[in-house]
Length: 395
Image (cartoon, rainbow, N blue to C red):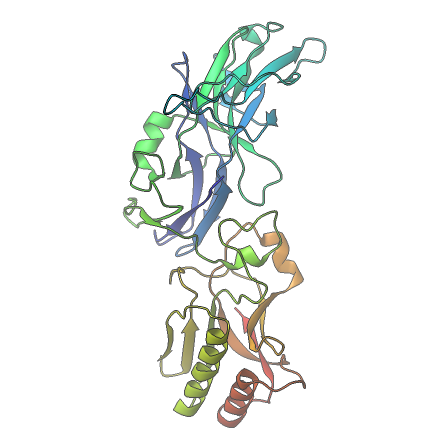
């Protein structure tokens, strides 16, 4: 299945809590389909949240917390899949039925799950769930659709319906994501019709503006509005992609990739800037990588050099209080990023750029000389007055 990426940039001027959800699927003969909060994140001002998912769909069933007969929270259940959606017949060919499942309610344990495999019988564009007859509506059971965020342990429900016994539910997913602002928790049942109209939307469905694309980005503004979604054909590199996970999405991360490096040095002479720029270009061109912009700027106290891989945005930044060592990889002769151990548990927050300051700890030790090592050591040693081989620590 295809990989998709959605991005939210908080430009509201303050920290905000965001929640992501999907459009409810079309379910046969069911008027009330409930949407669930899929993912929740907190973002500081100017921080970007990046969500990646493989467009796999899973069948879900289980109990629910209800109020006056209406589901309000889904915090447990079981899943099956990923499913195969049914295909319509073309050019005289017979339709191909989609994946089907049969539920099984154990009255003694009150467990609601899936029974033995059954033959595929779902309608085109659908998978189906057939409920058994061992329960009654008052048992407050639900079934529906689940999706999995990249790096998550298991899929989470994104849409549910109240389960009635002895019925077949054909479920047709819709590829449309939303982001809202507020205190919703993962698994909360939300009023889709009310909340979706005041939320940001990423519409990859066949009728949406993002159809044919795999990445969308939205910004949340100070006046509480959302910018128009910008769609792209590639998922940008982010530093969190360098942290081990089950999959790296649509972007294959090569072992040498440096993601993004923004580094600040004491005021330097033009010769050092030229040397660093030339060394970076030489090494990246040797890897047949299309060069993005590499620029220098000065605020009167520091010279800042910036290089960004294609597809990255300027507003992304590292998580506060996290450190990344920037060193030189002598083998590949390029800049490289190495995470400190305490960064890994915080990998749920995305990082796509870094700002560095000089430190007295050595990072470039004796070893094979490269153009990059020479440029940094010679330039810094001759201009800043700091020791040769100083390191750069992300702040």
